[in-house]
Image (cartoon, rainbow, N blue to C red):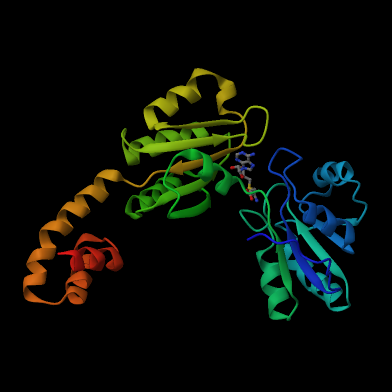
Amino acid sequence: MPEIMPEIMPEIMLYIVATPIGNLDDISFRAIATLKKVDIILAEDTRHSKKLLTHYSISTKCRAFYEHNERQAVDGIIAELKSGKSVALISDAGTPLISDPGFILVREAKKSGIPVSPIPGANAAISALCASGIASDAFSFFGFLPSKQTARVKAISAILSIDETAIFYESPKRILATSQDLLQILGAERIVCFAKELSKSFETIKTDILPNLINYLQADPAHQKGEFVILIAADKNKKVAGEKQLSKILPILLAEMGAAKAAKIAAKITKIDKKTCYKNAIKL
Ligand code: SAM
């Protein structure tokens, strides 16, 4: 159950504050209150964040904290936190640390015994997943695909072996090339979702087979513009084949051994998780 938290703001705290991924209204009351109260806001691009901060009349001192200065900046920030200051980390969009800087800072803050508190909010991957129509019960997030084709093909090939929804971020510059690589590796049947410009005027969420998605991208240069999340459904055929195999081998194994051992062996053969194999075994 969500609860309204009392206004407790300990002096020493590193807040990880989510900001909108497009629509400026997608920010929580608590995020705004926190950004107003802290001593320092660390922002990936201070000029970019100024728009949001001005919009919400937040006048807290804002300092640059980006990928290339994170390592050097961390010690100084930890020292400031230790001296009693409260700090909020924001990124250009969405949740900090998710394909954005902040991991080193959080890790070092925790090592130094500084409390870290998340202020939850927008995230492109989760927003896309919710509206994709692709299975949301199990998923893996891979951040950005490599920009070089050889590395990208290798990364896409690796997802052939996962049995859950795969989520990537992609740049408009590479969306078409990546889609063509996806088609080549995953085939023309795989269901994929392109979630583009979420929460913005040209929000588009298309879930379809890859040839149709490529046709959409090629139909109009504007279709390749904007920010993209790509979601790839798990291979249904592989799952069905695994389930068929499981239903064949389980009775044979159960004739020779108990359910736990049979499930363990069946999981190794079918690559279906042990728990599912066990559930099926005890039903027989
Ligand atoms: N920290 C952010 C988050 O929580 O989602 C992600 C930052 S990452 C540097 C930026 C990438 O996220 C974009 O290139 C795009 O792939 C994805 N993204 C961000 N905003 C988006 C939006 N409004 N619609 C679709 N994708 C978006």
